[in-house]
Image 1 (tube, helix red, strand yellow):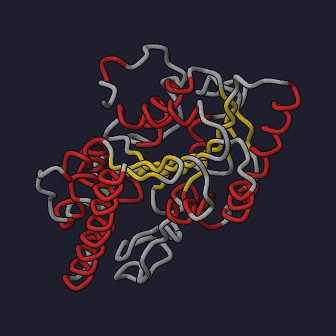
Image 2 (cartoon, one colour):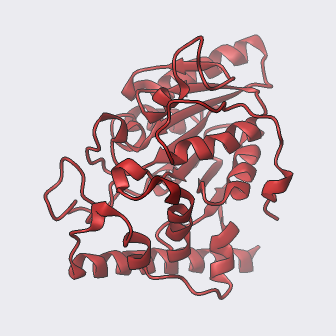
Length: 304
C-alpha cells in the first residue's frame, strides 16, 4: 500500500528559500526523495536545474553532500564515489545521481549505459522536464511530439520521445521505476525501496516545468496529476524483471476511466499551436503504451 503523505517523515533535507523557480516540480519532488534517503546519501549532480536549486557551498539548500560534475559524466562520477565508499566499507551511504532529461538521455547516456551494464551500485534519478530548461528550453530527445521549444519548428517537435526506462530495462538492472511529484507517497516508497537495493537502480521522474511548459506556476501538482490521469505518464516499477503498475495508474487499470490527453495538454502554452492530427497521434501513442502496460501487469500478475 502506498505511504500516506501524512505519514511521511517530518525531517526536512531540502530547505526553503532555495533558487528553484516558482512552482518548480523538481523542488517538490526532491523534498520527498531526500526524506526517503534520510540523510544517508551523496548526490552527484551535473549542470542542470537541480544545480541551481542546490546553490553553492556554504549556502546550499540541500543538507546532503553534493558533488557537481560535467554534463556527460554523472554516472561516471557516481561510479567513482561508489567505488570509494565500497573501499571504505561505507555500506550505509547511497550514491544518488540526479540529472535532467538532457543529462540522462542525451549527453549523459553513454556513461549511464556503461554503469548499468556493470551493474554499478548507484541510484540514478532522471527528472524529466522534457527539455533543457536550465539553458533556455531547448529540445531534448525526451521532448514529446508536438511540444514547442526554442529549438523546434513553430508547430513543435516532429519526433516521438525516447523510452529511457525501456532502454534501462534492456540493461537487466535490478530496479526501474517511474514516479510523479503529483503522487508523493508513491515517489517516496520507490526511492525508499531502491535505497536498500544493490546494483544500478533507475527512477524516471515526470517533472512539469511552468516556465518551459508555459502554465501558471500554481498548477504544477495539478498538471503532474493530469499526466498520470490521462495515461500520458504511467506509474510502474520493474523489480528484477517483474513489472507492475503502481499508485494511481494501478487504480486506473482497475476500471477508473482515463481522461483525454487533450485535457492534460490544454493548459500548456507549448502545445497552443498543436494541430488535431498531432493530438490524435499523441492520443494513439498513449493508448498503445497504456494497453501494453496493463497487458503486461495483469499477465505477469497471473503468472506469479
